[in-house]
Length: 118
Length: 111
Image (cartoon, rainbow over all chains, first blue to last red; front, side, top):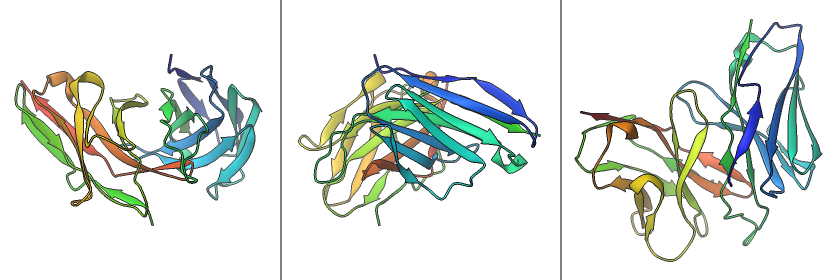
């Protein structure tokens, strides 16, 4: 089973709202990722968690706050977003094996959350 | 810096004909290369990857890719295209713990 689930599928929020995106995997993967994808563009990495610790933050604005409560769950807390933050937010997971510092393991993606900020 | 390039924004092919979606890479060291497909309003689905070994990699849904070290290419191929193959295809290279994606190629298969 290579399933990554994400909820909700769609989210509409105002600029003053606080909301959260949720991602879950039960593959025993120890690396989890958040990506942002604009229409017809490649995904852009936002955050990487490795063994439940934040290992990469790609200079993401603080209005996005990630959280990894346990090895199966990844959340993205949203607050005071801007309309330009509207996008498809993708979660992914992979094993954490490395070979010379680079992991050959496949990242498996969830279906994404379509976020619209009004 | 590690990168991948997909030189074609769009590839058009008739159903039943062979298809090729091109990808070239620039990496230091051994490349770990991936192909993903994305259908409208969906996440990315893994098709195949090259880590080491045989230069011809077979993947899901009848797709395969040929790794060519001298040409630094990793083109995606399928012998006979289906209309249902129409989607957005991404080539990617693994660097550290992250994936770097090409810009994507839209494949359109006509009946």
